Image (cartoon, rainbow, N blue to C red; front, side, top):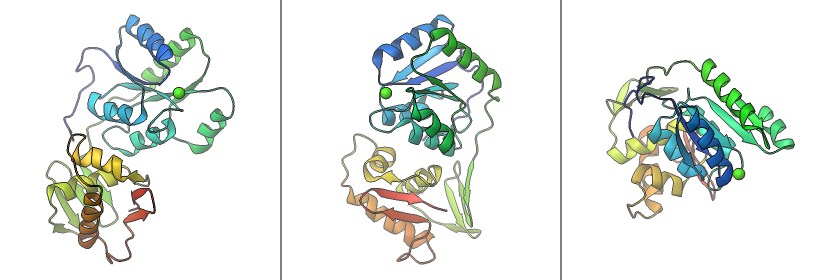
Length: 240
Ligand code: CA
């Protein structure tokens, strides 16, 4: 996980990440934005999109709701919960109808939304407006805190009630991945991808074993976990 602080204008141009599985639409938006001087990165899949949010440090995310892999609303929440990405403005693309109500209702954290079909001119106006409102990139947070748990990201240290808890590298990466996505269920597959990497063949039970070790170190009662809860048949969720 990279925590290199990026300054505005590092790349010279503002970078927009478009996460949209309708390739024609994505290409049209990309062309239009490039014509306006933006650097554009695209993704047609939710999980790949989330990877790119973290790897590409975009200045703006254009996010479709209905996506393969991970849907746009979940992706939006995950971006908002991660201190490294929480500040990035998001414009959602929605289909006409009830999805709009759903966004407002769920308060998923988008800055604006555009209802399909839309004119490219309207889209560009929204992009400019959101970018104007966006605050500068804040200094990246070095700490994750939850109740009596305190994690130093650069120091890779964990404290519980002020006492340091020794974690292995993988336990540390697993814990920070869970804490960054507080309240969100992470599947074993997603955890394997994030913590162990795409190419590394590891049995899914490896995740369960590491979760057990983390619970033994961090829970009051490892047999009745309150911080790292099991969501049966799905995966794990960090509660606090
Ligand atoms: Ca779609």
